[in-house]
Length: 251
Image (cartoon, rainbow, N blue to C red):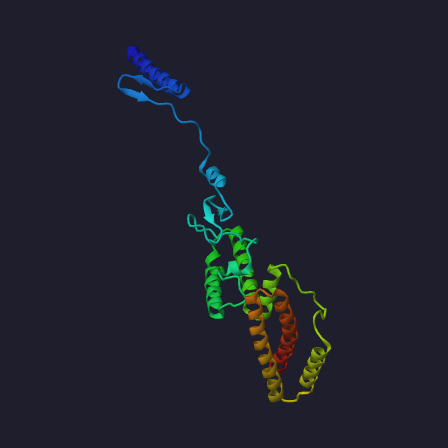
């Protein structure tokens, strides 16, 4: 019995020495019919290799560290919702061309699809961190949609992407005759005593806004940013009157 144990120990020790020689020496070690090769040099872990090959069009999933495209809301590997990319503009977020001429029906459809995928019911059983991400994404999508839906805010936002900003409370580029016209329309609205009178004023102002929208579209098409700014400044005054009309008709 003792001789059998010693023979077993010698056999195990022989295998151990063979394995260690394979690890410590780059050459292969041959013992009988068994061939053991040294393992390759240690390479970076998969997540490190992915980080090294990342580009501006990709990022890492916060949950599983899988590399994903920046436009993907959900990780294709673990399906975790990704944080919003604040370096992207609203057109990118809603998958629209960066243009003033936006197809409103397509914009509404993309908005509904996004909000459906971000509905809180889908995240009720998720970790708190992912629920917070869904709130951030939903808020950002709402803000982007409301900005791009209105011709006025869309135009102002688009100008901002080109480095042209509006200063609140100024009358830059507005001449006196136009200001007198606005004052007169406001007086008519204040003196209106029936819904019919209010609606008539609203229809006239709405037509002016539609005409200005076409002017802004043409200015952007020509690359005339200063012209677009001038038309948008005028549109701001008429849009304010339309807001007053809505408040009077729908108290």
